Length: 259
Length: 324
Ligand SMILES: Cc1cc2nc3c(=O)[nH]c(=O)nc-3n(C[C@H](O)[C@H](O)[C@H](O)COP(=O)(O)OP(=O)(O)OC[C@H]3O[C@@H](n4cnc5c(N)ncnc54)[C@H](O)[C@@H]3O)c2cc1C
Image (cartoon, rainbow over all chains, first blue to last red):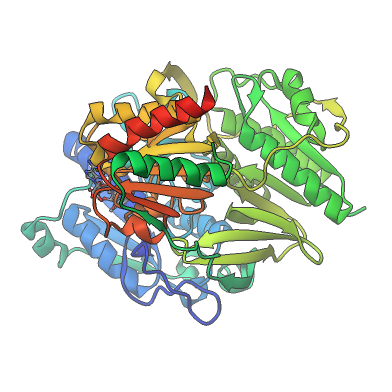
């Protein structure tokens, strides 16, 4: 099995900052996006079960390298990083375009993506990449079961009422969730080995993409204002014994017409 | 005339979801503010039958009775909506942040080369286009953004508005557009119903959520009882989902669902940032926690310091007594 994992490096949740031009500060402190680590783990298990190789694909600035090294330490064979100054400020549309162009130059049976990212919060890039490449798209995966002999993959997709079992021919793109399972920690040996693993860097020119079609100049969304949300008044603290506490909760809810 | 504003509304079991009705109401309000025509698009089996329900929210309805057969509904929807957008050229298309809504939006992005405003919690009509409010950076900032083009997708979270009947219903048009794309085939080989998954925490107006403090799967009994008494749904943290105490469908937070109920009761939940990002926009937050210093105290409206096993059953009884 040849697997490519789309891996985004994101600011640690809760520490995000903005730069001057309304952009998310990506100059330091990036880690792998949560959902991307779940699909990475699923991909590593598939390679362990079926043989083959797992490669990560990241679009992101140089500070993303730390997250990529961690993926290599977890077991990815090598990595591709699309780096270009013109990419700063890219929206989901541009990201889909770039990742599709990069994937097109790679060989794989399965491309795996996280269902969404903690910073972008769009959850649309996986579907867009698959559509651009004419790949079957199987999303919200709780389990991924390829059948290499048949050249097909089955995915358990979370549905509002349970789950659907989806099947498609490979190559395919699967977007996955936390239900794929907890990611492993890199071993010491893995960390040592990661140092000599290759991170190939590709530029927009390498991908034949016009820099004007990505990044801030091409974004479809322009921030007008950014303000802290309306603050809550601060919690009313209740330390009474249970009976009295419950009375106070009921009064509080009734005053707000919630019961 | 300036381009129309459309909503693409999800259906479940042949009925529009609450989220879908909200999108129709929001679209109607935007259309009024902008003096632009509006439409709600329903795609799927039973769309015609569901059309009147969604028409009551104001926009005209485009009902496409497409039978997905063995295909995922998002793919079928995206193909039809892409065809309709090309043919009728609306300016702005609203979709929901549901799994199917986001899949449909991603496919449309690629088919139409349309950009999107994503994860939107409110939309108003600005000077000459929609202005979207988005909660970013773990809720520490709220941005207002506009589209840089005169058209685009807007992907809206639940509870951006309350679904309301308009003063007059929209008209209903049944259509059968040829698919506007030929997506790579994916087959649904089985649809499995799970009782535990039949919760829609995103649609609930009251959520009672339990964390590690409930101590085990049985501990969710008191949580469930209070949720029942309040007519609400049961939520959970990742810690308890990982422990197998309750299903993932209940998980709220960064890698679970984002919710915005009127009332959020957090029992035995510490309030980690990854949980907070999924529920902090809730109307009223009441926390019950043994530890007065739990981070949730910083963003709750009421912090009850105590043992949830002593508080919840009494609260359930008090709520039931009031209702009786
Ligand atoms: C990539 C990633 C994604 C994540 N996504 C999510 C997510 O989507 N959702 C999510 O929730 N978390 C998520 N997390 C996990 C998150 O960091 C926390 O670990 C988790 O939210 C903690 O859950 P908890 O509050 O139930 O448990 P704890 O933090 O252990 O808190 C338990 C609380 O219960 C209280 N308590 C104990 N007993 C009682 C009692 N009898 N009565 C009253 N109070 C009691 C304690 O004082 C404590 O405050 C994610 C983490 C990562 C790394």
